[in-house]
Length: 193
Image 1 (cartoon, one colour):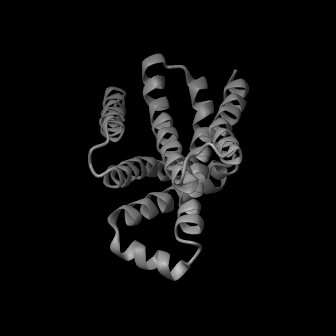
Image 2: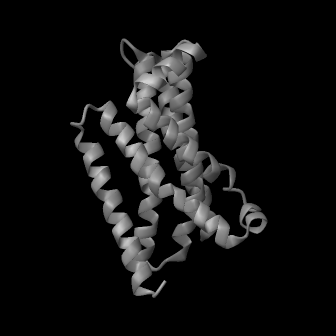
């Protein structure tokens, strides 16, 4: 069952990107398609990040370990959509001008938050291979992957600033992430860890 869940998650994770590419090629993304692609890839990354956190809560409710088979593909897709989001900003929005992009980053909080979230995701993505827990040692690997929590909160703050503090989706995701973290802390206390 874990193989089915893992491969299904890999396949489903590709769907938003394929859909967005299809719309880009069909010219149905509106007057400024680059802006639509920029925002959509960021939204996909954020939603997949939240889905990754939701798996822990789902396991807490069901105690079904097979759910964790979806965690790695969801995490890798999260990173890939976040990387696509940043690349689209750099290449399409900033025209690929590194100096201009760096100057923008120094001035704008949402860009600093977005970069911080992406950099926190990088070690998670790099250690999402089967050999990583053996190489690092499982306790170290597990602690490293706790970076998902600050990553989620920083990514939510990035989206909140971009949406000018009025986006109901972002506020909902913020509330859910606090709830997921509280349920994780409760589960650890309950199990005496």
